[in-house]
Length: 263
Image (cartoon, rainbow, N blue to C red; front, side, top):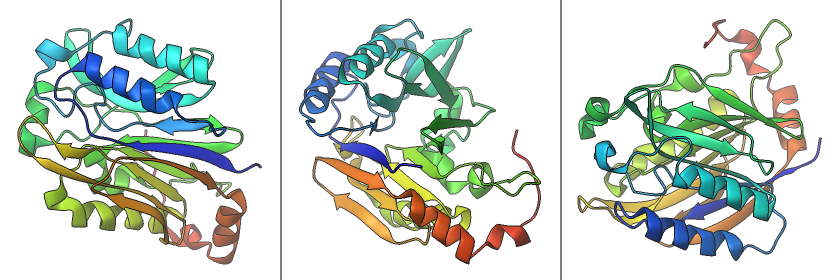
């Protein structure tokens, strides 16, 4: 299998201003000249982490999903990040996995951040989304999900093949809890023997909460391949498939793991 390239966009977000955010992100995406397969945006990239879904929510036919479809098609990339979606009278913090051909999958955030009353405004998801790209399997999750290892855990079938090779978290994770962010990203990589990518925003939000970014890429042994604090950045990384194969072959730890299945 070939290597897989990701472009991480760590950026300030305009508070509850969709037009400004989409214009800003479009300029950043269009500035990318190198070939890229997957572009990752932060959590709630069009609004910031807002508890005002009644004002900001869109449907799946709305402006932001259409923007993602147009950008992915024009740039010939997979584009992913989360936004506020209304469906069936409920609000979701929904990650969209948009393909260049306009097809998409989605994941609704499972663990809602009660500390910020997210659970009072949004409905929780119940299913994981593991996407496939050129033989790679990618588990897509959102911010607070990072604190819950069972939701991310590999649960191989009887053939003992891994469920996923890359674990992606899109986030609005505040600087005050940056130690947890950095520690848990490494833990998820080590315990799942996979690459982990965390893409966070920077700057103050509308509640004057500061985000230091510290978007990170970690290899299957927990080694940090990239980390950036307090600055906007557009970072490209090519993940090495052979690295996973070597780690899993030399250290087949999950043969000793408890057997369970996440549905």
